[in-house]
Length: 346
Length: 289
Image 1 (cartoon, chains in turn brown, green):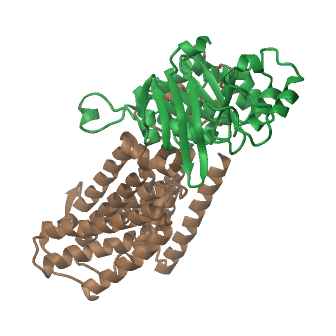
Image 2 (cartoon, each protein chain N blue to C red; image 1 turned 180 degrees about the vertical axis):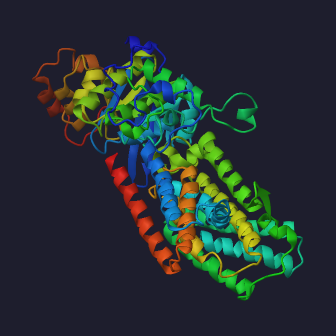
Image 3 (cartoon, rainbow over the protein chains, first blue to last red; image 1 turned 120 degrees about the vertical axis):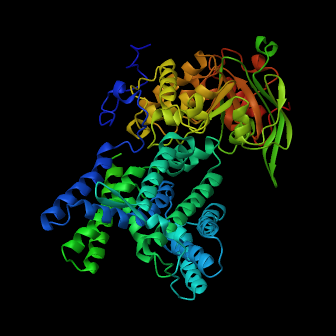
């Protein structure tokens, strides 16, 4: 059996095979390679290290524990949004509504708690539920009417934005109950403050990593984006799975809404507008392909950190905020180009 | 004659499927016997794909009966047919390119780990699936070294090899191959044909739908010729030439299914087709069932 490795039916293993022709090495490990290109996964990490190295030469304050703690706090909302966004982009979809849906969720939970006196925990759950409902609507429109995710979520982006302002009457909601902002509290680790929200975000990343790599649900997210027709032919209920993915993404936006509220201590109807594209930027910078089926949640975490480090580093350098937007825009196009060029090779 | 005494593994009698005015299947019969490769051929529009769809559950026939292992079955979807042990390989390489071989083999049928890790945390048994995939690929002598290699790094023939291996791994009764070489080059087609032979030799009967006559004649044990929505005849590559079979397929030759040995004997003379052609006026159907 073992000496049948080069039989006529199989050509000698294809030359650029990423496994490096070392079956012994790849076997017996828990991790399954999905993207098929390790270099593409290492790219974002290099970019992050490069950015850190650059900013540490530009500012003495960059390479401090306090600054990194600050970056993590700033990244936590975008990072959480990017988790949901990753799930959707892996299916070859996109969600332009994530930021405004999050804003709507934050208004729902804060207004219910402050204006209607609903118990904070229940209000939080209702806010998350509102985001899940938006996710389900996105998913239902994409699956049942076969509409492009781009257009559907452009529509729900506006709907969520409008509902947020109508419901809040354009007013910022303050005086939030303590429970609602507790995730913004911090604890000290070796003298450096970390917020509980940061820990929650990291746990969420770990959980979604587990689901994507270790469960059949996760395998199906990838398969769906990689080859929907093959996935359907294998008896997987593609539409049901897709609807579930959009809904789960909605729930994650709801958690982002809670993090946002905890961080800002208010319900702000104008929040989430820039987070929308920042989340997509984080996913793309993290090496997830907009064509679906390829990408990792670790990459998204790195992508979110890149966005955070850039923002933070440019602020420390005294660069005007509009230039941060400019640089982010250029980076996204670069990342997408790299993705496209890398795929063409295969 | 000896064939008639065996029980077909899959058979159909009097299948009918109409789409409005169009009759796609017009009283078709079908038999697949254990241990054989049965090629199904027919001109475009002859209704062979409708027949295959009926057999694989993609289409529910209006009338007629399908039997699997002698038991009447009625598939309402391809998933039901798959549950009954019928797997299908499609021409357009129905594999997920970015995913590895083991994942593709187990797509939709993933194995979980034993113990609480599997039942409680629903963790996949990556190692077990890779080992099983390795065994399966080896039994078909597909020489791919690493099961954690992405399918897109394989050649077209190897990719179809993955699809064939998947079908062979899960099929308990038979495998349907729908134009499995249509998207492949000459050399890669040869590899896949060899694979199909091995699937049969490993004990699974195969239904092969193909337009490619040389391929059909190379590996089929019997050839089911479909014409005008029904079976025109069943011949073997030993008793008929490619030319004769094409004649039957296009209606140039009318073939009597009831008495195949009398009409087109083993040593079919070259002058026979024209004679038969004269008998079969165009448009007239082959003899009734």
